[in-house]
Image 1 (cartoon, rainbow, N blue to C red):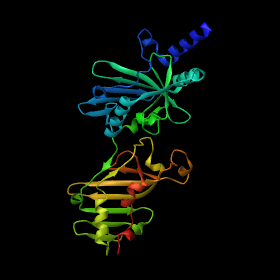
Image 2: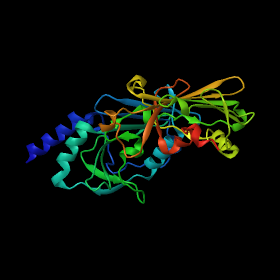
Image 3: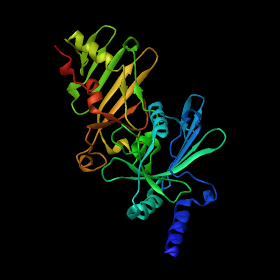
Image 4: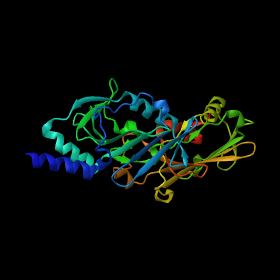
Length: 316
C-alpha cells in the first residue's frame, strides 16, 4: 500500500509539474482571490501548446502584447476568480482518474500581482451533471469540484474564456463594434452578390433611394431612416483568423460613405458542405464578415438582419 501511495504521489509530481512547490505549505482548497483589483497578469496554457498572457496596463488589458482584451470578458473572469468556491471533494474512488485527466488535458492558470505569483491551479473537465468543474492547486495531490454559487451553469471553463480544455486567444480579443452616428453617413451602397436586382444605394443627405441601375425609386422615409440608424450599434462575434474568406460564399458588400472615409462590411455565408460540419452548424444562425479589411469574424443573423435587407423591403 505504501508503494502504491508513493507511485501516485510521484505521478502527480512528474505529470502535472508540481515539483517546484512540494516544499511549500499549500492550502489545496484556497482557489479564490479576494483582491482581484491587484492582479496584473494572468497566464493560461493548455496541453496542446496554446498559451495566452493577459497583462494589465493602467486600466486596460492586452493579450500577448498584441491586441486589446475584451473588457466584458476580463471583468467577468476576475469576478469569477473572486467568487469561485469548492463545491465538494472528489470521492476517493474517482480521485486517481480525475488527477490523471487533469494531468493530461487540464489548463494551467497562473495569476500574478506586481510583485509575485499569487495563485496557480489547473482547470480540468466538468462533472457529469454540469454543475461543477474539477480543479487542483499546483503543488497539491487533492482535486476538488469547484463552482460559483447562484450562477448557472456551474461549469467554469467558459467563464475563464476557455473552449473546453483549450485556450483560444481569439475569445479574449475585443470584438468589433460597428457604431456610426446617422449624421456622419452620406450614403450607403449595398451590393447583393446573389441577386443583383436587390442591390441599391441610399443617399442619406437627400433621403433618396436608387436601384441597381441607379434609377431613383419611391421608398418609405421611415424605413430609410430605420436602415440608416441600424449601423449605430452592431456587435460582431469572435475573430476567426485561421479561416479564409475564399472558402465561403460572398453574399453582400456594404459601403458606408462618410465625409472623408468609406467603411466596408463584407458578408459571407457558409457552403452547403460547411453547414453539415460541427464547426459551422451551430444552434445560432451565423454568418461571417470583414469590417474594413479585418480578419474574418462571426456575426449573428439575428443582430445583422436589419442591415442585410433588400431594396424591396425599403420601397413603398
